[in-house]
Image 1 (cartoon, rainbow over the protein chains, first blue to last red):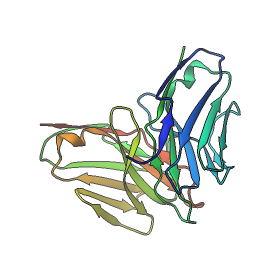
Image 2 (image 1 turned 180 degrees about the vertical axis):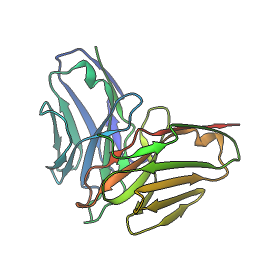
Image 3 (image 1 turned 45 degrees about the vertical axis):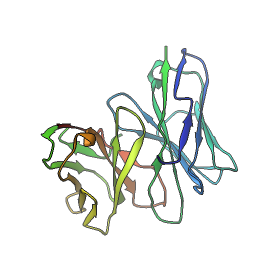
Length: 114
Length: 113
């Protein structure tokens, strides 16, 4: 157990809809990263938040957006869902102490877009 | 794009044997990490090795890093059926503290009882 939780576990949406995924970081962590993992692939970095501000973004369109709250929990929002958005979405929390450190992953949210 | 490439893509061994997995990457890194994933669920961190380190141990795990060859290996000794999982290497960039991790496609390890 990493202490990182995600909700919901599974989600089914239809093309064009919007979705919000939630992540609760490990206690004391100030950084959260989101990753998308398609079937049979490794996770791909979406973006990272540090102290409520975006701190780096991967190659994802603007319809992928996020928030980090004062308690360091986080949301990933995806608008205008497409079939290719079907994937496992993982969040990872870490403590930024000025040097690279371990990222602790949650169990993920499995999103299916029909 | 994938930075790391693991080799082999799939590995099947008998319980008690050692498993060796390799990872190659393309650009300069600050650190390299290995993760395990069971049945498409969350990733479990195994070990982090920094670019100025050459070898690290953690229990039955041994990781090496050769920055001149841009490669790393993960050795699991005395494997168990519970080690059956997908294994990923992930690289952290040269600059930035907790910047993005770039993952490979993973290695599927099957340990036969």
